[in-house]
Length: 225
Image (tube, rainbow, N blue to C red):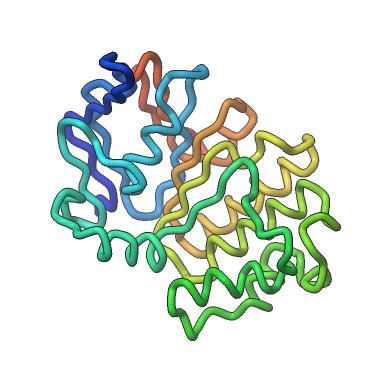
């Protein structure tokens, strides 16, 4: 079943009467349970595609369907609610609140979503950070902060996790640990994952590889996992 569907999607940015086209005629379906890696050189439109797929930004032309509905039909409040409850985000720079502990950072995501069910201790155990829950972000390594960010992304039991360069700031060992965590989320918990990356090493964890160049899809292949 398709959980994301992009049809003839284009994305333009406008500045000082100039138009910059970032995405051109994008057609892609993502099925429930897939682990999709999106690669391409800087400026190819990878992050923009992730933002458009997730509803963080709107497309200029074409349509994006999420959970079987056109994003253009969502009101702002409904779309925000879906992002809080059914989508998890992991970014390159962690975006943890520095004045909150690990536990409190994850609690904040629960509170914002109005979620009474998510088990913070279980989420921290899943990412191997249960013994660091009283620490502040500045007391953690980059790899540890990213694992906390993953726990925050999954605390509301989302259907989809969007990850933008999640290993971009990590050393090799930390990057491997984070990718093994994503793989576990996909295989054991059946989370659909769309991950933007520059790293070819990441591909061995994924089951599909989409390549972008100059805002166009130039490759889309299944991987032999």
